[in-house]
Image 1 (tube, rainbow, N blue to C red):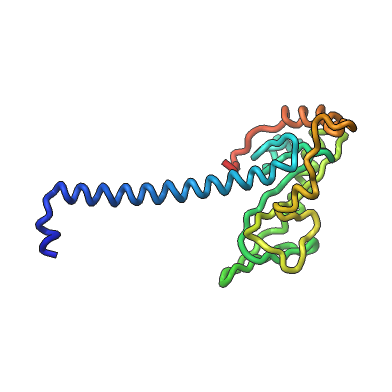
Image 2 (cartoon, rainbow, N blue to C red):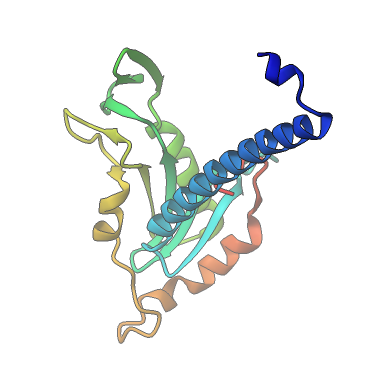
Amino acid sequence: MEELKNLPPTAWVLIAGAAVLGFGLSWLWRWYRQYRTRKALRTAVTAAGSEHLVDMLVPDGMGGGFHVDFLLLTGRGILVIDLRDVQGNIFGGDQMAEWTVMDGPRRFTFTNPQSALYDRIAAVKAVAGDVPVEGRIVFTGRGKFPKGLPKWTLMVDSLRAEFPAAEPDSPAGTLTRFTEAWQRLKGAVKPSYMAHMR
């Protein structure tokens, strides 16, 4: 202890500098890992479409808008995705008002997201017109559904299997049929203030 008291001021400056540098590097590493995770997740979701929009407000027809995490142009039409990153075992069903998450000692509930998804699908249909519009609630791999998946719910790993990417120049011209509706949708939406996938 006596030796510490006798340290010259420059030594204290060096010690403080090393501590700040260590903290800064630790913070930077955590930020970089989170950034990579978010980027990989975004890539996994958008791979199901030939074009995509992220964190958009779709007009609700009454002067407001619905936040949509992802809009994808797929070979089946337009896909609305509500992305959920929930850790733990999730228990939910079509008729349940709330879904429950159990993660070790933690337990919490959230509102059944299906009705909000239906609202978003309806808003997109109102803008896009006469093209197929589907919606899915997509959960990341941090969550599990031990009792099975509710309707319109997918794990991110199976999104690409359900919505295989269509080639823009495919012989059937599947995507060409939806291009006009997609352009109309792109023109109607605006960036959402609730953006979370930066």
